[in-house]
Amino acid sequence: MWYLFLFYLIVAIVILGFAGLRIVNQYERGVVLTLGKYTGTYSPGLHWIFPGIQTMIKVDMRIVAVDVPRQEAITKDNVPVGVNAVVYFKVERAEDAVLKVNNYHYAVSQYALAALRDIIGGVELDTLLAERERIASEIKKVVDIETEAWGIDVTAIKMQDIELPAAMKRAMAAQAESERAKRAIIIKSEGEIKAAENLKIAAQILGEVPGGLSLRTLETIEKIQPDPSKTVIFALPVEIFEGIKTLATRKREW
Image (cartoon, rainbow, N blue to C red; front, top):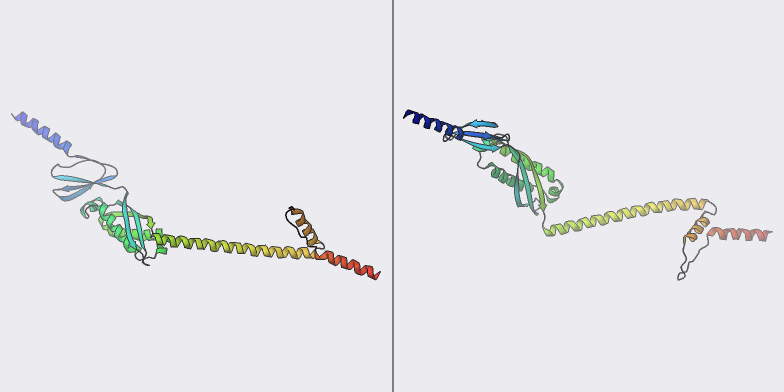
């Protein structure tokens, strides 16, 4: 009779031994509770706990990306914007993430959402659009300070999209179009000023060279392609009239 008891005892020990085996992966930590009380954190590897008395809660230590749903926020200059973001964080202390907060994924997401609204409410729209990275960094600092007590390290917060009201989009598009038109006019006027300066220099040089204007006129005539339906009026250079006048004066003197 005793050997049956021994057999059942051995079977129970074997079952109990296999039932208590736990494998903690390289990227995990195992938080152990004995009769509901925290008794330790197990590192990666094979471990054994007492079934029914001890429980192990595995915590993923890798970086986790949590999406913050699109939220309506009001900027400092009273412009409503829709913003969605992503929070990247990882667990630094597994025991704190389990014991100090219920569902740390949800808690981090909600706190990031509240911080996002607060920070956006303190900046104007132009600043929000131009300094998105800096504002996201400020949100990260606020969230990181609060979640540090939970054993959470917030590595980054990225604002994926900033949606503006339709009227604001049209106003910004009109402003951008006006800016482009202004730049085009400025560039064109600067080009005309430069061209006028070059023409002035060229005219001075041609005027100093005898017959320079005549040669320039002949080049212009050569480039003209006459059209029977058009009339080309050719103005003789002043130098020709001056030359004729000089010859006539000398002839009278002779």
